[in-house]
Amino acid sequence: MTSRPAAGLAAAVVVLAGLGARAGLPPALGDPLGDALYATLVVLLVVLLRPRTAPASAALAGLTLCAAVELFQLTGVPAELAARWPLVRLALGTTFWAPDLLRYAVGAALGWGLCAALRAAAGRNRSRTAG
Picture 1: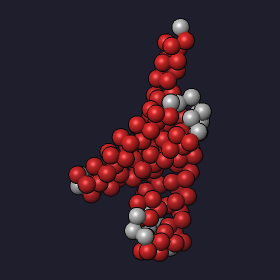
Picture 2: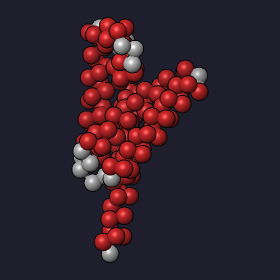
Picture 3: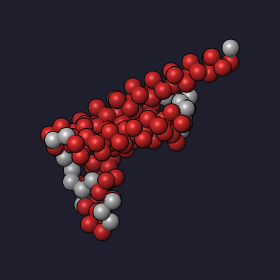
């Protein structure tokens, strides 16, 4: 089981890193990194909601959700919503772009690794306090 506080802290760091990448790096680097970190965040949010979720399952759920959002952009609904409520753009995007799916896969893999590391750390902490 992953610690919720640790997953929450990791999620906050990922958000800051994603925003920093978009703001501080050239778009050729910042955009792909930001997209990947978006998927990493979604994986961490899965673990925040369900701390007992295995890292691989959280990564698959996060990737599936990100892919669904990307495919939803094909309908035009996210663009219409973003025109009315600009913050919607942050969560749903507006324009489908197939390479984003690969970026999400990279981010989900990173999320898998982070969740596995957090779970291992939580296990070590539990065994220290139990002994």
